[in-house]
Length: 88
Image (cartoon, rainbow, N blue to C red; front, side, top):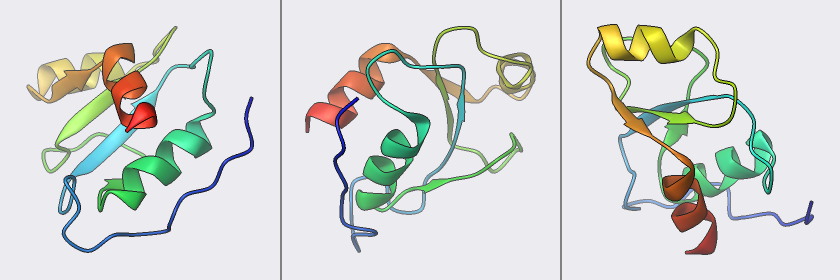
């Protein structure tokens, strides 16, 4: 795993005012690194799914958060989203 850090927060980033939850594991990136990158684009990573969550970022072997997101009709993002996010 690479040791990379990103700016803490960007005003007006592409994910400004977006809340996301991360579940599962990711082979190429730590959850902390995904969180840092998402927040660098203005978004916020939260711990639990709620009606105000914009999307769920799903890795391998997701937990119960995936089922809850489906019940609440939360947009679900997969590994392609993570790869695009990290390579931007």
